[in-house]
Length: 334
Image 1 (cartoon, rainbow, N blue to C red):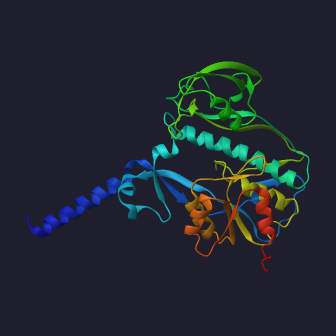
Image 2: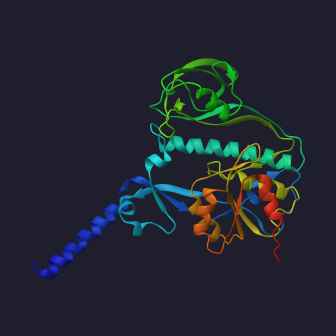
Image 3: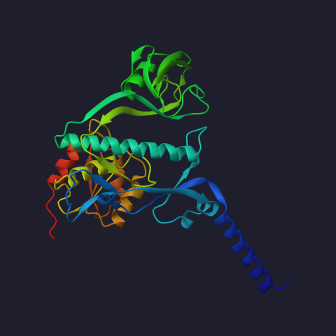
C-alpha cells in the first residue's frame, strides 16, 4: 500500500476511534455551569408585590455522564467543567437514580425552611418545631441497611429524645464502634424500635456510625401561602436565594435594583451552610451578568473568589448577615 493510502487509512481509523470514545460513556461525571436564573417567576406568595428591576437569582449545576473521550482528554470537556468519579456523587451501595430522588427531597425541604426563615425575619409568627433526624439515604453495606429506610424519622436513641441531627450524632457517639444502639423511628403515624449495630467512621477515627445520611426534620406551619417551584432542579443549595426572594416579593427592597445571585444551604436558625459546585455556580452567575454573588463563608468563599474575576463575592454565615450586607450596597442607577 502506498504511503498516502496508509496515512489516509490511519486518519480514518483515528477519526473512528475518536468518534467511538466520544459516544462511549465513562465511569465518571461532569459538573457543568448553568446560567443563573431569576426566582421571581418561580415563587408565588400570598400578598406579593411588584419587585421592579434587578432581582434575586438562583444558580444550579448540571450533572451528566462524561464520555470516555472527556474522561481521558481534558481539552474535550466544556468550559468550566470538572470531572468527578461516580463515588463522589453516589454513596456506596446507592445509584444515580436514588441520588436524584434524594436531591428532590432536599429541594422540597429547602423551600419550606427558606419560607419559614424569611417570614420570621419579616415579623410573621411561624410555627417551626424540630422533631427529629430525617433519614435521607442508607448505605447498602452499612449496619443500617435493611433496618432503616429513607423518609423515616429518628426520634430517640437508647430512650433519649432526638430533636436534631446533632442530637443523633451526640447520642450515638456515647457508644464504641461495634456496639448496638436502640433507635426509636417514626414513619407516618406509627413508631417502632430497632436495634442497629455501629461501625467506625472512615472520616473520624473512633467515632461510631450506623451508615445513614440525615437532615433536620421539622413540623413547619406557615402563616401565609408560599409556593416555590423550580421544576426538576434538586438539592438544598438554593435556600438562601429562596429566602431573599420571599422577603423581596413581600415588599422589601432587598436587591436594591441589582442582579443578586445567591447560593447556600439555609437552616431553620438562619445559618448558611456550605454547598458543592461553587466553581460552576460562579461561572453561571457571571454568564448571567450578576452584579453580586452571595456565597457561604469559609472554603466556598475562598474558592468563589478564585473564579470570580470582576464579579463581587459577598461571604455570609447567616440570613441576617446577607440582608445587612445587601442593605449597604448602593442602589443601581436605572
